Image 1 (cartoon, rainbow, N blue to C red):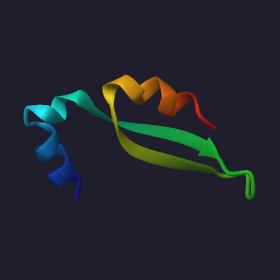
Image 2 (spheres, rainbow, N blue to C red; image 1 turned 180 degrees about the vertical axis):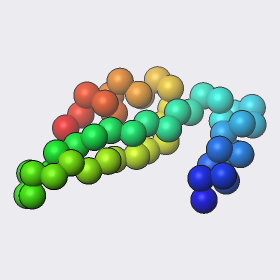
Image 3 (cartoon, rainbow, N blue to C red; image 1 turned 120 degrees about the vertical axis):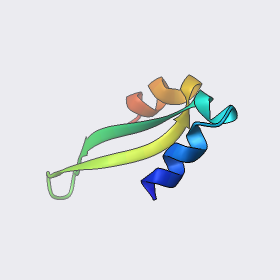
Length: 51
C-alpha cells in the first residue's frame, strides 16, 4: 500500500502533499500511538499543532 502512495505522490500535483507522522499519547492507556496523514504542504503546521 505504501508503494501506491509514494508512486502517486511523485506525479506533478502530488509534490504539494506531505506525509506527516505525529506521536500522540493516549489519554486512556498512557501509551504512545502514531497518527499518520497525507496533508497539503500549507497545512502541515496546523496538523502538528492540533491535539
